[in-house]
Length: 196
DNA sequence: CTCTGGATTAGCT
DNA sequence: GCTAATCCAGAGC
Image (tube, rainbow, N blue to C red; front, side, top):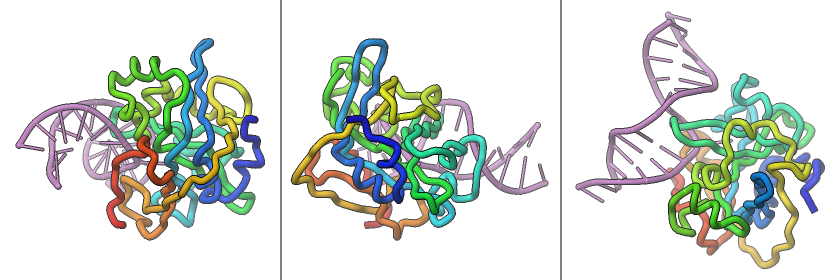
């Protein structure tokens, strides 16, 4: 039921696409907060100038170089955390999938307390969903293939149409269409890539 | 040690 | 559509 290590041990771009429709689960004490992943981006390694791991290993990005299926949480723009899941095939030294948006399922009341916003503004962006789910740097480097405080459940979804576009908020590698989202889903972020 | 800019968001025009 | 807020990581000296 929980996605296992082999799911993440494939090409980062494939995993980004296949994470759409899966369920991200965050447990806080005995409460579950969850949502369907509706928007992702793939960030690879030395072949991807937009990736944190492009120039090699640092203290911040080291989990991207380690075992797949672990969380990579980083802080940005002075206010926000972004959640990634380490994913790469065995020929690649680093890679991760950024979770950009989810569709809330369980724990919506708690998400509203955390965000003080209406339903459609709770989790429709990478910095928004981490706030809604109370994800910060303390959750960096967790094994998401175990049923702990953060994991991803499998889910059977049919008839979704996947759109790919350049990634959001970057200035390089705009020729790589490594952002994926579920067409028509209202919880996808409203951000637009620089070129499309 | 200092400086620069960011895988963003909210709020204003 | 535009931009301030906000602070840390990474790079350069």
